[in-house]
Image 1 (cartoon, helix red, strand yellow):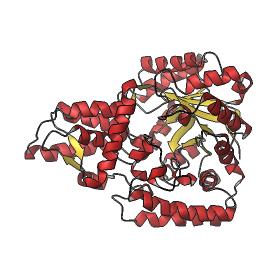
Image 2: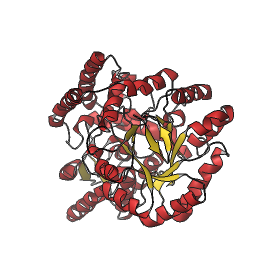
Image 3: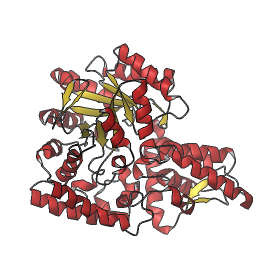
Image 4: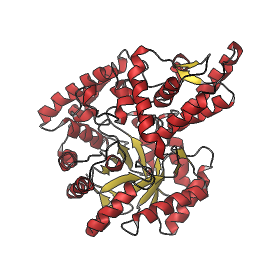
Length: 459
């Protein structure tokens, strides 16, 4: 099944560029170029990149694309390119007209006249700038020919409906996979279906866990961000692997890989009544993996097989995990459990505890892990926190809870930006909000501190 975006046909499977420029060790350009060419040969021509997808401000998706288009100019017109930006250092959203314009124009400049930006989306909605103001600026940039259309990233159903009344929205990007099904039930998918807006589904293979390539925690490379994500921590990892093994058994019956099965499940959602077109954008750094992902469109899932997959996932919803909003991920924080998972410090937190906070305090899922810049800033700020009084606890606890409605909008959680915002609010009052820390979390903390050392300098 193919789709159309801005009048151009795109393959049923797209291609995520993040892993080519934003990881501890990026692949050689020759390898990246080969993977990119393979994506086009597999009809994966919807590419998704970012202004901030890189280990330095001057090395990201756009700079890689410029080099690629210089080497293969004939490919520039084959790609339908979606770029996200408008995030300040530390990955803080800024939807002001000046910053949005600066971000778009910088992206255009980085492409150097090679190819074009078909869609642009702000990495997150800026709560301090009216949506109308941000979208009006993007609409102006469309009229100026600097971008082809306006997309949205990680917003909720209400924002989608409001945005569609302000300007034409050509796509909405959210996370959808067997590990992340919230958009299918929280109104996002329905809003997109009602408005005929396609969904771009990132991390459709569950950050690699559904690929079958990761069998143990030790299979995750050193300094890989997944080492600090709750999904990959014991006992969550073991619980999730039980799910993966069952999916692998079904994949064998279908004569496909588990990654192809996971992608086929996402693709099959588009065929369901009331669902929009959903285009998964798996990332891959090798030709073989790109081709494997592209062939997922050849895997047909019958209705009974979709039911079987859902039955495999269903038992995880009653698993004895910390919370249950996204149980198969192993960790999340719902409104009913906020107060159980948050505590207020009675002494200034150490750098280790602050690092743990910045790396794991998420209101919904591990995808909301803060940036390294936020980690570094949080450590500095929380070192100055003072002891709080018992009388302050109820009010601050209530205030902490209210922050969980902010970001990421798409999943009803606070997200990385809300974490930083909450910490800043708390430290202004000379107090700190932290997560409980026990011995089993030491590996998380150490990984977070290591990540901070590796990545914080460029932000």
